[in-house]
Length: 160
Image (tube, rainbow, N blue to C red; front, side, top):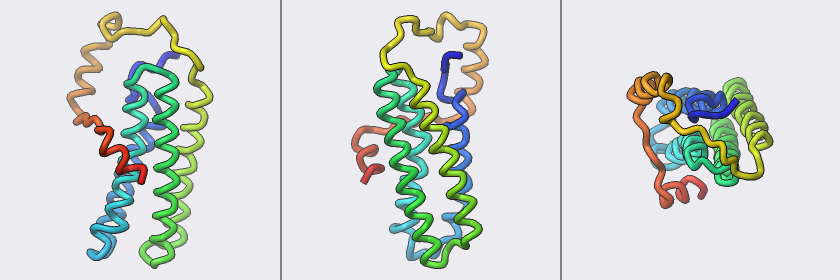
């Protein structure tokens, strides 16, 4: 089955859920972490689904893999930051375990997606116009979400 949109990817959906859950946790952090740990965690968790989406939109398997590797790097950053929260007493061992298991599931799904992508570009690319029956449904779904493209400079900030 061809990937028509990043919305179809379970890994993108899971990473969006992780971002929502992490933002809820971040609100509980002390104010002195506002521009430190909480800001870094926000950048890392936002980067995960953003890079998945951007890579998929590139319509090139090699570039898609490149962006999936960025998402994996952001997962590593996030797991490190969650461990710091635990060490600083902001996150219990149980909460840490829940977040880390979610990160590990996303990492596994990213790895599986990387392995499933072809090495070369297929010339049988499905265009959006040839799928007119789904275009109104896709338009409605697109209108439900605000789409933001990460600029190259912002992306570099996420990988720091």
